[in-house]
Image 1 (cartoon, rainbow, N blue to C red):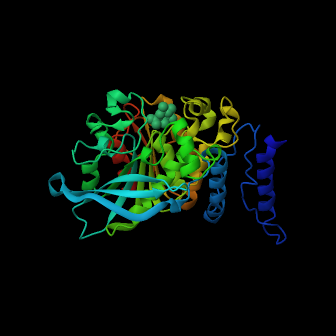
Image 2: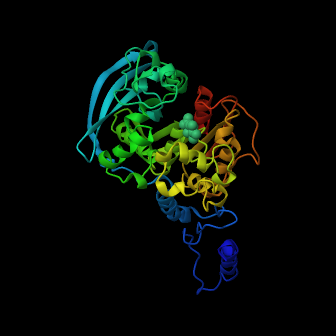
Length: 423
Ligand code: GTR
């Protein structure tokens, strides 16, 4: 019976239309109770055409759904203390085109422990005469890996990574050998030239990316039952904390906070932006399973793959969909829809089959009705577009980038994002 609910729903809508001149007919109010996500449906409900007011009502329910079913509980926002300690700068860099500073933010856990969140900040030299937009980013291997500059402080926190020794990590700590190895992923000079300030931090300053190491910290530091939270939610909270910091800066142009995240941090930035309106535009890069890609397609990484390798990323309840991807009664198009009316760039790469580029494209395409209700001109190509580096396909609030090459975050991905922002 449940599988016929869309017919019942649309039937109901038609009756409401036919009777629209009768005052006794109740207006149809969409809620997730109408759009039930129930196991056993042939397909999850499609993202519907609704009015902007209806979308505004529905959005908290969508977020609540994804928190309960997928990502789990957020740590308390108030764990971030407001005293910022400046460790370096502002120092003039790039031949005077910008400034760099390094700042420590303090998180105070439920158990009284502290975690230090080391920020690397850049802002253009134009600050002083004008306020600037700020781009938030969490990085993979710590701030020192984003640049060759010897002044950049090596993180104190444990960093779990594959091929640790080859990347210059000994006993889970970065060494000089790790300096600059990920510099291509944060093209600071380009972003400064475009007028952006940039704030980045190593994601494992917030929570180690390892199941055994993460669970006790979730429990005692963040005060959350590990079964009911997930690392993606905790890293997403990290983006919110970066946003708090950015908003306190005198150079910040109010309303111009944007965020970028790659891969597992693409999943985190998607969830962070969905749950924080201050992020006005988001660049979700090569995010794949648990990010922009549709679960039901089960192409590339599946729910079984991701939950067995990274059980700590999601709340335990989500693990129940392992090997049953085709039965999951909701999909990521709903989460992408919840970002409207903000701008979103979904970025894929031709050699990134593990992240299912077409699934990422279709995730956003399926979410279009939500964007169109706010900005009718929002559109994407009918089918998977050809690669075009630095180009944002689409119009209005949505953009899709298909870069040539591997799973990575490159300057051309940022170029596509900035092209969307300039629209
Ligand atoms: C892979 C994982 C992906 C993606 C990627 C990354 O091993 O299967 O979901 O998150 O890591 O973050 O680089």
